[in-house]
Image (tube, rainbow, N blue to C red; front, side, top):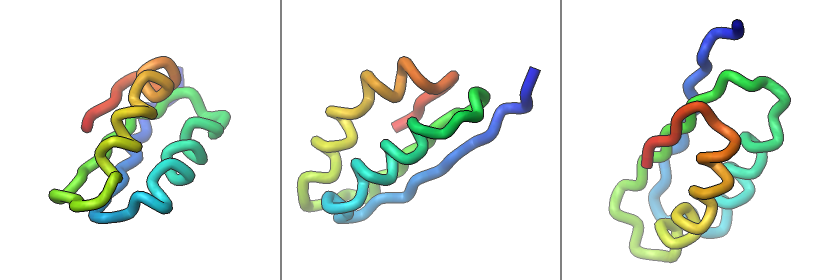
Length: 66
């Protein structure tokens, strides 16, 4: 059994980068990952883009926190 690795993504108005960031973690080959995304009150479309990717994250990662 592999140890659990926590990947933390802080986000504030990063709508142009957040999908690529999350997708790059989804594509990792290591299986024991928990994903923690912290949005600090973004005023752009970051939250909507994160929410759209949550189903894929929940299938891929052991734990997802947003």
